[in-house]
Length: 452
Ligand SMILES: *Cc1c(COP(=O)(O)O)cnc(C)c1O
Image (cartoon, rainbow, N blue to C red; front, top):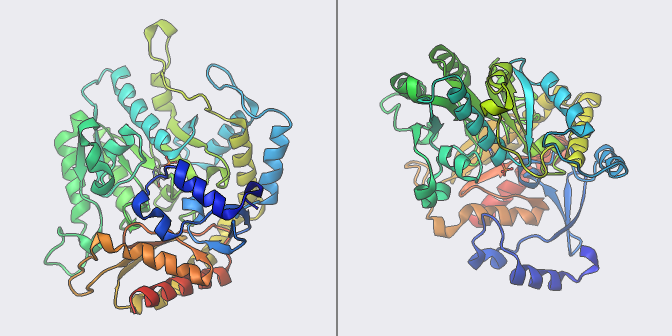
């Protein structure tokens, strides 16, 4: 199967030659990593021929299952024309057509598409554009960024700077630029609303206070609308993003929305910002953009921003940023096929029923004594496990409880990957009602096995 190579040999080579991302190699092999050799619909197939429901859509990017005929055909057809041609000072057709489509389906403030290859660079580009924008508008003092606690915007240095997950980011502090930090809207572990029974929006107030106090120094606010993904599927309170938009607009601050994870249907709408009627200055999209096929990202910007960069070449207003594979033709062809499926199959209209089915699948989990909180936003969920429900105390990290629960879920033919002790459910949008029930059952089985 795996390129015709024996599974044991593949594993040996993996151990000998590969360095995996976000992976402690001292325990890697003992956690029995999958060796994927094929996919079929919502299933992954490993080198020993075992099938697993892809419960995290291959880390949140697979949209319509694996080997989707229309996307396969679009990439194959594009291969018959050209795989890649440069976008630097030139154009290649699929990228142009895709830009038009993206402008048509995103909020009307967004009129220009700048491509890159992944979510981190999509954010990095928005940061650099925002900084240069203020220089070009004669306000170079607006150079600081505001990010939230528990934010994750990718792994390049700028994206890490605006990120707020200590476990990932603290180590790199000496490399990072200073960011104004607003509290994470993490209701389950929030100290701000102490003394109140429910959230009174103190985190939003704190953000607003920071923005007002530093308005003249701030270039932009960066946030993940809907939910903070890698932070643990931390769902934002309804209305949060709308309020941030109102305040930033009033203070003349740019708003960068990172929809790398939540965009492309995950929220139940094409983009999460639609749910609150918000029009950002920048929109970053990646993961699901190509249906999970190829690395492609886009940073969308407004006319107001784009126009600031216009001028004779010698005025040096040009945006000097670009990647070799910017606007890659195969990636753009996959993205166009993905958008076609959204239209043809009326995918968005069908999501409400799946979101309800996911809610139903999660319901039995809330009864387990080690489930602290179940959070859902659209077709995404996080099940936060705790050692003690009353005190909300976490398990020791060394116990790797989240990983063990996900591993046990494989008994039921489901592949999951946690974020610490939060079990993440992030299935392809093509998941069926029955498969959603299987996901829920598998997590319950994992809980009962690891925490009987
Ligand atoms: C995954 C992710 C990124 C980074 O995208 P990569 O393609 O992994 O670089 C950025 N922002 C959010 C919200 C993400 O979930």
